[in-house]
Amino acid sequence: MPRHLTSLLDLSTIELMSVLDTAADLKARYKVGDRPQLFPGRVLAQLFEKPSLRTRNSFEAAMVNLGGGGIFLTTAEAGLNGRESLHDVATVLSSYSDIITMRTFSHTLIEQFAALSSCPVINALSDDRHPCQALTDLMTLREVFGELAGLHIVFVGDGNNVAISLATACAMTGMKFTLAVPAGFELSAAFLSDLKARYPDSDVSQTGDPHEAVATANVIYTDVWASMGQEEEAERRIKAFTGFQVNRELTKSAPAEAKFMHDLPAKRGLEVTDEVIDGDQSIVFLQAENRMHLARGLFTWMLSADS
Ligand code: CP
Ligand code: NVA
Image (cartoon, rainbow, N blue to C red; front, side, top):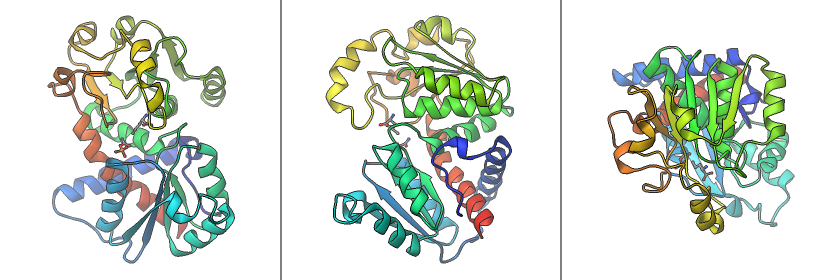
C-alpha cells in the first residue's frame, strides 16, 4: 500500500522531521549548484480544481529538478465532473504516475482518491488542510530560528485550512500556537480535542484579542480572510475581521524581533498592510521559495520509502 499525505497526521513526528532534514540537505546542495537527479523518468501528475501559483509550479519544478517530469490536469479534464467514476480515474491516472498531487474543495475527495490510488497521493490543499504549506513553514522556521520547540506562533485571522495544518504542525513539534480570531471563525472544538488527545503536551489555543496574543509572539502569521470557494462571503468577512489586520499598530504590541509570515497569495490592504508584508521582519518570500525545496525533500522521502 502506498503512503499518502492527505494530512500531517499521516506522518509521525520523526517522519516529519526526516522530511525536513531531507529538504534542508537538498536545499543546501542546490545553493551550491548540486541538483542530484535522484528520480529520472519519474512522473508527477497534478490534479487541481482550484488555481495555484506556488504549489503547482513548485511541485513541478521539484520533480523536474530531481530528473523526472510532470503532467497537469484539472479535475474536470480528468473526468471527475461525472464523465467517469472516481474509481476508474484513480486507477488509470495512478497507473501512469509515481506521485499524484491533488487540490480540491472537498477534503474527502482526496482521501477517497488516495484509497483507490496505486501510487502516493499528496494533498496540495483542500478546504480543510494544507499540509505541504505547513511543512514548508516548519522548514522555514528551522532555517530562521534553528530550533522549533518553544517557539510561539500567533496566527491572526481565519481558522481555515492553513491555520488547521499549522496548528497541527505546532502540536507535533513542540511549538505554542495561538489563533487570534473573531467569533464565528474559530477552529472547531472537535479539531482541538482530537489534537489534544493525540498530542497531550501540545499548547494550541484561541482568543479574540490579537494585541494580547502577539505580546509573546516569535512569529505573526496571517492568511486571506476569504479562501478559495468563499468569494461570495468576502464582504461579510471583511466586516467580521475588522480589528484583525496585521498592521504597524498590531506589530507594535509584539516583540520587536517577531517575524511576519503569510502563505500567499495575500490580499494586501485587507489581512496585512504593505508596510508589514514588505517590512524587514517579513519572511514571506523565503516561505514561497522553500515550497520547492520542501517538495524536493518530500518527493525524495516518499519515493525512497515507496521504492
Ligand atoms: N501558498 C499556496 O499554496 O499558494 P498557491 O495557492 O499559489 O499554490
Ligand atoms: N486559505 C487559502 C490558502 C491559499 C493558499 C485558500 O484556501 O484559498
